Image 1: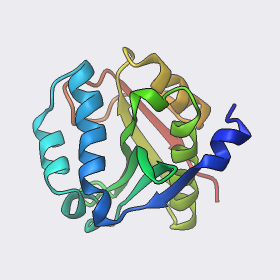
Image 2: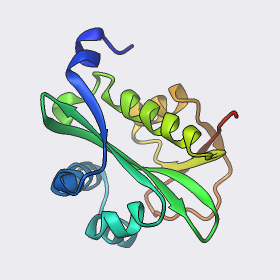
Image 3: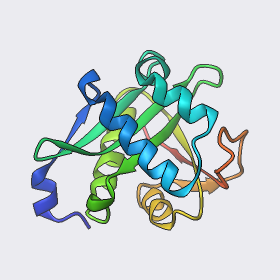
Length: 162
């Protein structure tokens, strides 16, 4: 449950280039802590605007008293016509406070408002708290469909109601 204190101090905002270094830092931090950066990571983190925004996606950031403490992206894959929840990260000091949930809710709301019918994500069962969050957001495990990352052993999707 997200406490009112956290809800009151955290603002979810959409992409602005001024947040680029924070987006990269947060993602490198969690990936390098548990895994290794892969070619796909380097491509996306090297050009978030080109790989996410310019392709019809969006990036969301969580600010706590003006400091970026979390992020996630809604990526559109033109080759498949599908949308992905990707690059979700929360600063270690801010984890467990419901910030990931707030980011996920903002992403799902935006997706629904923009006609997205389903969203998939790739995860790893080693990140148990993340997997619990995805279930809480309504994602369900499905059979993997051409995973993009070697580190992923779990494929989930959510069908959005219209």
